[in-house]
Amino acid sequence: MTSRHQDEMKRAVAQAALDEIRAQLDRQTVLGVGSGSTVNHFIDLLGDYRHYFDGAVASSEASAERLRRNGITVLDLNSVGPLPLYIDGADEIDDDFCMIKGGGAALTREKIVAACSEHFICIADQTKRVPQLGTFPLPIEVIPMARSHVARQTVLLGFDPVYREGVITDNGNQILDLHSLMIEDPGAMETRLNDITGLVTNGIFAHRGADTLLLGTELGVERHV
Ligand code: 5RP
Image 1 (cartoon, rainbow, N blue to C red):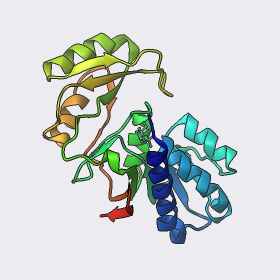
Image 2 (cartoon, rainbow, N blue to C red):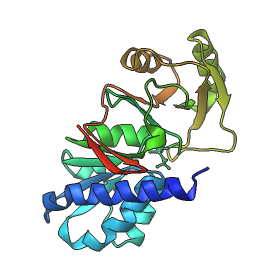
Image 3 (cartoon, helix red, strand yellow):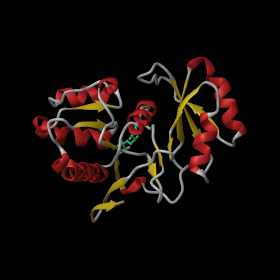
Image 4 (cartoon, protein in one colour):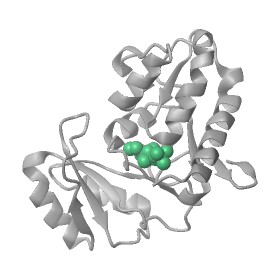
């Protein structure tokens, strides 16, 4: 549940992200835009600048729809080159800018857009900053017929998987949330989870973490690089 106070911090980092990228926009620029409530603020602010850039690639159907509602052209990732900038939120981010993402079930497309982007700006409020990843349950996207197999494999790694009932991803798959394990080595765990057959994407963003963190705090927005 997002408090009003937390929502104000989310809006402030969204504004800071817009301030950060505004000078880099030109009529050829295609932005990568992520998903979630913090990004929603960013999309709403970006609408006023829609004539200053070409369009955006969205990491979810919900973000694509919101972009269109704000008059921003949504482009297919396959028809554009590498993206100069990707702006997205996080569920947790550590000191090395490794993240847990996927609280909104958009992790697969988020990881794809992040992989195609030259610079990842993470926008988050201070509740997301952690010394170690793992308090927030780690989302993984699974092929439906493999759900039980994948769950058993994650138990062998020490996780406690919980099926996110009623949620179907934009790719037609299901989500398991992995509880009860602090992640000591995010890069190694990202690789290990990638090895499980039937697991589409895991929500650890370590191999492609953030480059810049804009963190909303009670005292204002902090910029970390
Ligand atoms: C969606 C995500 C979001 O970036 C993450 O859940 C943060 O969301 P919010 O800005 O609402 O706190 O990974 O899959």
